[in-house]
Amino acid sequence: MGCVHSKNIDPASHVVSRRLNNNNSEKTCRNSSSSSSSSFNSPPAYDQDMKIDLHPSDPSPILTEPQGINNPKAALRQERVNQLSDAFNADPKNRMVQNAAHSLDFTTLITNRDVMIADNHVFNTKIPIESMVTNQKSSGRCWIFAALNVFRVEVMKKYHLDEFELSQGYLFFWDKFEKSNWFLECMIDMRDRDVNDRVVQHLLKEPVNDGGQWDMLVNLVERYGVVPKALYPESFSSSSSGKLNTLVISKLRDHAVVLRRMAALGRSVEELRVEKDKCLKEIYDILAITLGEPPKKSFTWSFRNKDKKYFEFQNETPQSFFRNHVGYPVTDTISIVNDPRNKAMALYTVQYLGNISGGHPVRYVNAPIEDLKALAIKKLSSGKPVWFGADVGKYLQRDAGILDPKVFQYDLAFNVSFNMTKAERLIHGESLMTHAMVFTGVHLDEHGKPVRWRVENSWGDVGGDKGYLTMSDAWFSEFVYQVVLEKAITPQKYLDVLEQEVHVLPAYDPMGALA
Image (cartoon, rainbow, N blue to C red; front, top):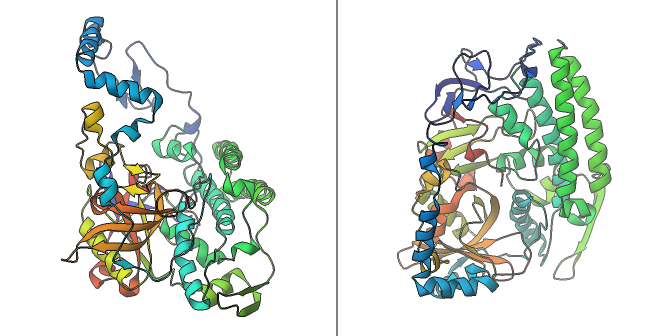
């Protein structure tokens, strides 16, 4: 695992700046074999003053509960509750909505009819090739589905195919295995940190999950290639990954404890990695049993296209298949994000975010939201789809397949409004990137400005336009965080940012969320 070198830590913004090859920077991950027993201090105790000290050696408390919470004046009083009840019942509208909401999903009552009509599924700019919407089912593999949905367009165009899918389960297998190695290497790097360290606890909370980022996808494809879905089909655990994740996570935490115990006894990094390999053997067996082993030998791919013409390609490997039949320039792409908390036209990464040790780091070029729109329009106008990441759970009318901040009229039923900015939502935990999808079209007004966007999702063909969604441009502004472009069509000013100093966000930053 590559170390993170840091300097110029700003405690207010939690942004760390670094140069990848700065010899004077402080190494935050440790490569020496030194040991420490600090990781095995007793858990912090709650004293009478409710002070929590996570580091007993530090004379000043890390966290002190604010005065006043236990003051009797802070408690809710029955008199105030009675006043609130009287005010509620004084408005007949409240009783009417209450009666309706007793039997109905309340969002049905507040769905905006005008928005449902305006956000239709007709677009004046669309890519020429669309396929049936895929289905990730009960898994968090949207980022893999979205990427492979971009890739399959190249194959369908090349061979005149009506339908085609690449195996999502194949990349899922290797991602889960590589992430397990990544997590264990993180535990080795941080072996001398206190177990209550915020970053250690962040990684232990979820050692692996189904989500990912674009650069993590680049790593997987570059190393493992891709295969047609027919050669590595779905299994129960790829389509419903919850129990598999629970098993793998428990095993990884179990080995994290073993590694920390060994480090406390002064064992070397080499000895820790021998122990790590024992864990990886167990993880491989778990994945092979639940998902099936990936192809190990060359294979033959044969099919008939929509013109009934027969094709057969022999002696293919996953790597040669991607190279010969997909041909997408996956390693020559750039991720452009909109993070209004931080400086625009600057380069960012997130500490300890990745999947393949020695692979490409996850890097983002931060830009204004209007730039993301213009770049996406440019690519769509050339007939190519756009991978993007967003917070899909916000203002989604799923049956109609509409994403619009005005689709639900909360003020009519609840007399409430929501007024946070995009930056404030990120800062206060209200929003982050939760899902990856694909833009396949956009509707432009007479001035060339976007009105609504066509979205290929991966939740099957139910809802919306056979599974395709319509996103209003206002929703794009507020809840889209990332788009991916090929470098060949990206303006030079964004490529120049890749040569800048990298700002390292902490591991728990919301921009480290996995789609």
